[in-house]
Image 1 (cartoon, rainbow, N blue to C red):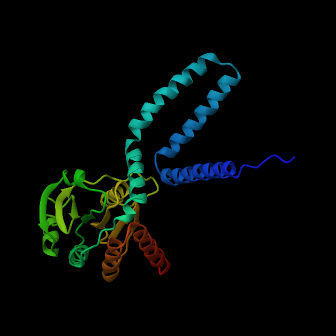
Image 2 (tube, rainbow, N blue to C red):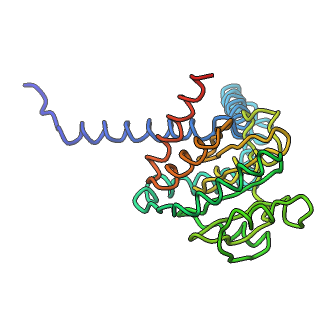
Image 3 (cartoon, helix red, strand yellow):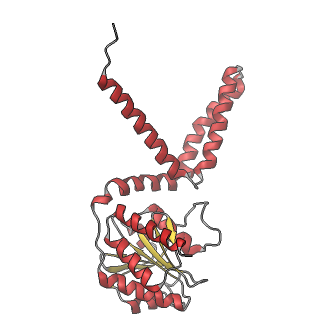
Length: 271
């Protein structure tokens, strides 16, 4: 007699394998270009050494490696605290925030675009973050609270080289300027072009740790860029910048990514 096949058990095994592969895939995508990659190589070497010490019964080395593993757990949590926090934040952004899009006010985007294009012509650096579902209160506290209405003139004044707030970033939330002179986290992604300056890295860094959309002007080149989800596109023309920024802010998160990547591919193809 043929053994009875339990369909439920087969589906359960298939589901578990699929979930494990998906989690491994997402983990590999997440750590790509981060400091975790060299760490994983070190862990693989330690595991191989640990297996060899067990195989050849090297008691002293085995004891040392056992203690080293225990210590490395605490070291991992301390050293890679930013990566862990960013990973947990991304989980919430990807699977929950997609259901709570925020609409962009036409006037706000137009004023920001007008200001940044004006600053770009004068090669004056600027950094503007649009708060989304993940709050930016921590970063706002590093600057000066304003709670002011948005206008191109006010943004130009804030980023004026003679002003005290020009080196920091501006945070915009609920259609108002929440704070200025804010310090944003610098990206630790090793794949970023080394030619990019501090503003670029701050824009990318904030977009990695939160779902904020960050627009910036390079003081060195006068080019306007947008950072979103850890990615950066640049070399905008005036109308293109206003269009892309407006559409990214008006769409739910999954559609914002599609617009972002589509424009970048189209732009690169035209060069």
